[in-house]
Structures are given as structure tokens and as C-alpha cells.
View 1 (tube, rainbow, N blue to C red):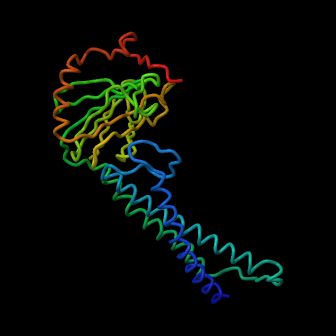
View 2 (cartoon, one colour):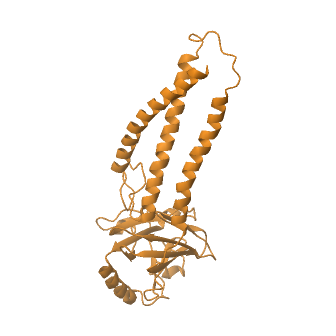
Length: 296
């Protein structure tokens, strides 16, 4: 009995290895084909493309987990097929009275523990990378409101501006629906950006998938995170906390530019947003309550 179990486990492991390699290659190819960078893609089946070191690490960890998951599923599938073929009533009319098998009992205890340890090590490394803020080149303070975002640049003139979603009727060519905003966040490529996130009313969540950033905005509390954009372009995110009626209509837009373009934008923004205390035109009528343009 024990020798048969050992042979079956070796045969199953070989079969699983072959299927694992083919399945992983297929899934990786399909995922890369249906996942864009910076915003959601049609038929997307994977994370958005990585545009920061943290997101690159998340991609690697996800691939590692995918391999483990596929291996476990295929192993269980092989064992189930073996059991159905060998131990059905027709093939095995006299059932075994075996009640214990030391090898199997040790294996199904030790192997899951080893798998969890193998997952824990890169998981802790990734958490440390996300939570251990490196020395920042600049800071952006982010405040969530119902239902828009406000941004401050304390290291670059301490100006403030509000960012509201662009109504569908006002969209320009190339602007995605429900993601475009009137005032974008602008940061330089390759620089470490510390973000300080808070809320003026209820709990929001600042999420930028391509940067690997997702952090809650809590009233009365200042949370911190960071990102370092590795490529120029437009990147979109959204509030990821159910914060009320228009939760789905408070997008985030970050434009990553060269350092020279960023310096030019800073000088322009200082003039444009000089009246820091003046409310956004779309909010002026409601004394700070977001009168969002109709999108439905």
C-alpha cells in the first residue's frame, strides 16, 4: 500500500510539473495581453502594468502565488483522478481497511506549513517595501472630500487645488470617461514622492493601481505612503472606499512628466492656484459641498 502511494505521488508530481509549466505560460501570456498601464483595459484579467518599484514587486509576488496556486490545484486534481480510477467499486471490489498512513499524515501537515513559510517571506518583504518610506524628494498632501480630492504641494510653494471629475459632455478626445479630472496631479518621473493622505469628512481611500498605492483617508488622521513613477504618462485611479452617494465619481489623475516640465508646471500652478482660499468654481455655490456635474 505504501509503495503504491509513493509511486502515485511521484507520478502525480511529474504530471503536475508538466501541466504547471504549460498553464503558467498560457496565463502569463494572456494576462500581459489584456492588462494595460495607467487605466483599466477592455477584457483585463490581470493587474494594470507596473509603473513603480512597488508595483513591480507586487507583480512578481502575484506571479509567485499564481504558480503555487496552480501547482496545488493540479496536484489535487491528479490525486482525485487517481482515486476515482483506482478505488471505484468496479476496479476495487474489496475495499482496503487501512485507517492510518504515517507518511501521508506527516506530508499533509508539513507541506502546507512549508508553503505558508514560502509565501510569508516575500510577503513580509513586500509589506516592508510598501510601508518603509524612503527619503522623499517631494511631498504631496491629499485630502478626500465628498466627492472630490484636494491636493497641496508643501515643498513647492504650498499652493492648493481641488480636482473634480470631468462631465461626460465636456470630455476631450483621449480623456477616459469617469476617470478624467479638471486639475491633474503632476509629479516628476524618477523622483520619490511622499503622499500624506487625510479626509475632511468621511473615510475615503486613495488608490493608484499602476503605482501599487492604496491608502485610506481618515478624518483627523494623516496616513503616509510613497511612490516613484518609472515612466512618463497619464495614470488614473479612484476612491476605493464606499464613501457615499457619489463614491464612483471621485477619480484620481496623476500626470508624470520630466523634471524640466514639472518645474515649468510648478511656476504656472503657483499663479493659477494663487488664491488658495478661493473655492473651486464648481463648489462655490455650495460652500464646500461638491456639486458634481451630471454623469448619469
